[in-house]
Image (tube, rainbow, N blue to C red; front, side, top):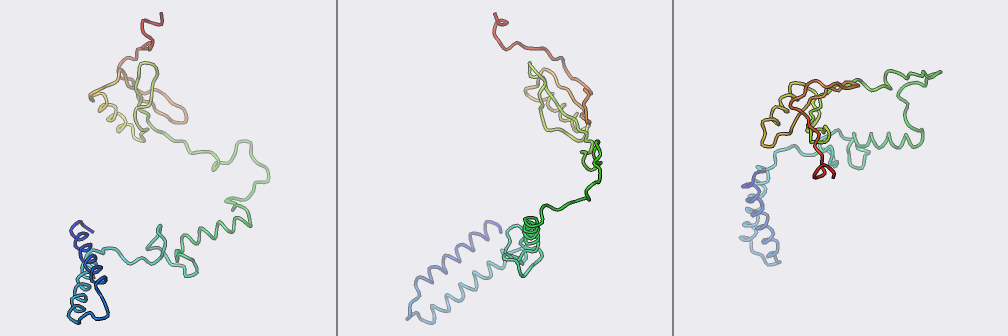
Length: 188
């Protein structure tokens, strides 16, 4: 609904409210026909402004989701989640795989996390290397990010790009990191 539709609809509804306040037992037919035309105008404005489908459920999370007539909010998705929670109260948590007869000391492949690789942009703040942006999944994107930082208005003394893959290695360093003592006069 755009701003013009919103203001026109608000004006029409306020006018209907005024008509409702003015109604009495002796209201003339001419006044009732005026109320009827104003009501039609408000309904037409409402029809123009509504763009989505009519919600099939009373669920705020899934208004157009599948319907379950037995659910209090008519939402099949939420009712399925509630049923699973009630079942787990009685039966305990669901098991995803059968219990092993003898557990392996090294675990099962599904238990170990998948090896992830990412590139970490870091800057030298005078004391330590610190992360200067979000870790990137693409090396080229991380290098472009560091290049934009180096061209920025307040570049750091040095930048480096870390490749993290279960362990990490320094791929490239821009600038020279110099340790800066934070105490004045060298801690004298």
